[in-house]
Image (cartoon, rainbow, N blue to C red; front, side, top):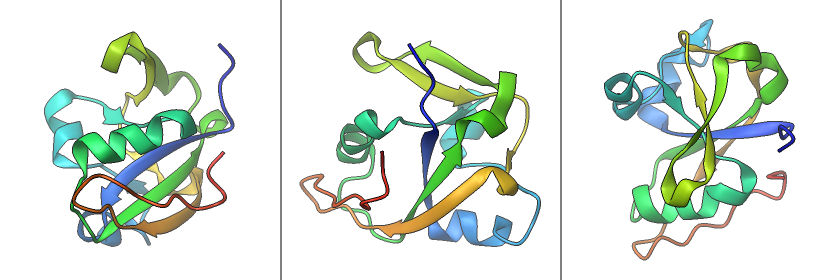
Length: 118
């Protein structure tokens, strides 16, 4: 498996806003509970949104450069045995975020992803 250029973090605007002008983002409560930050690849993103964020607005999608995460980015089996990117070793460096975009997921889990997702 080749590492994609970007991995994607879904966060609430309320959780991410305080970190936007700082050095790092600690993630969402589930990240703290699990001991690592959850990410998805472009191919995994729609299903992650459907399963975990249906009916939510006020979300932000963070496109994170995989290369900037180095050895702290670990690929581990999760949903259906697919390898998912997880960040260990501290907060996500804000400098690793290439771009961000607002998201809204309908009650049935449908979301229109930004064209830049690849």
